[in-house]
Image (cartoon, rainbow, N blue to C red):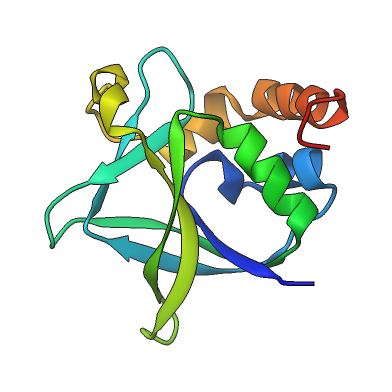
Length: 146
């Protein structure tokens, strides 16, 4: 069975969200993605990334060892607003490049972005508890991803 590495930069960085969706917290390490910007999505508590300039960086986590079930859940959770993309991220500890998948906001939906930076701490302080409850329901529903 093939295992996957996914770079996450928003709500999937939080153990509570991961446990609610895939019933575990995968191995992770801090990483950055070059050439992208992270913004708020209008009227939502989650962010999106879009291509930026070469010097732009998005910080996040590399989740390692994700199985096919995990990937189906992530694909369903991210929805059609995001495009799963393969590329290279940089591991913060070693500075070495690493191949990973990540979810990029659809170019046709750019007008739905707030264009203010997304603040992870604000998400934790104001929205994490309710978001976790939503994720538990999402993971428990008989969605087509199962």
